[in-house]
Length: 229
Ligand code: ADP
Ligand code: MG
Image (cartoon, rainbow, N blue to C red; front, side, top):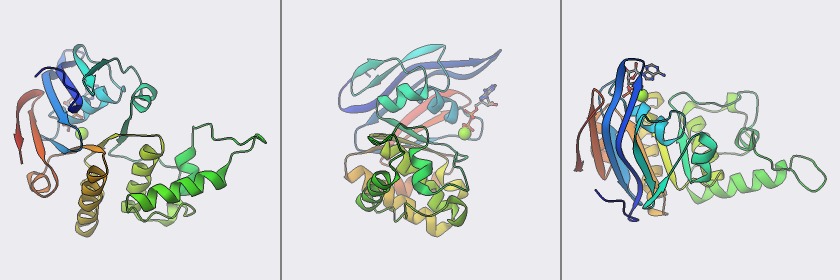
């Protein structure tokens, strides 16, 4: 497929080799704007590797990446974030004795004119985003006091706070209860209806049926095809 501005993300011919092992062999991914696009494949298929390439954690050995139809070079997560890509990893990266807001601003220079970390302003912004996307996260809660499902929403907020237009969720349902999965699906639909694009990694077919618009299947590092759900 040609590079096209109707697509939030296009990855063409992505190959990634670890030593002598080819984890990805010429994989293609075309993600339409404002869609939920699932990447389906068994454990070890290369799903996380493909997304780690998009997020700048791995550099591909071959292939090209286009965002909104434009060729980009993403060589680290800061590049990815600057280009509007956010990623929620399978294992969260939150500091447990910090609050939601402290975690969200961690590593960002949100300092006021007195040189003090402006937590009040950040809390307000976090509350706004939480409200806007129906996340029901309390900016002042400590991470250690909230459920894993809520912690995941904090990771989503962290990406949104940094201006993510496209959100990568790596196996997000693995840690959730059935009720939390229902809520996550509702949140994903809401994000998409408000202009975001979501890439969700999963190895469960059933989850795709209820939450995705399009599905790309990868098997042992090979691109198998893309179907409308
Ligand atoms: P999936 O997310 O689909 O379960 P991964 O993308 O994590 O699969 O892994 C694909 C293959 O690449 C696996 O065989 C895995 O062991 C291998 N792999 C992933 N990351 C590395 C790495 N940093 N070094 C060596 N091998 C890796
Ligand atoms: Mg994985």
